[in-house]
Image (cartoon, rainbow, N blue to C red; front, side, top):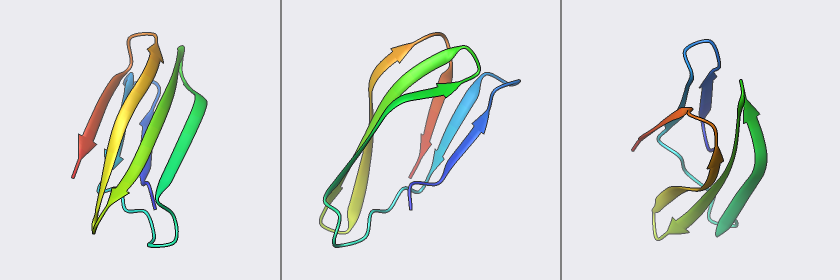
Length: 67
């Protein structure tokens, strides 16, 4: 669904081709901890596309969104 690939030792989070089902218009993840970083992610379905946005990040984790 949201396809998160965390790599705490590499200090990276990959979000690969996120896709919410038609019955879910929005999904929020709060206080997601990866290594020393805590972040919030918002996913929103717009037609057949799902957007991903980092709404809060405390730490230096690199976030890569691959659509």
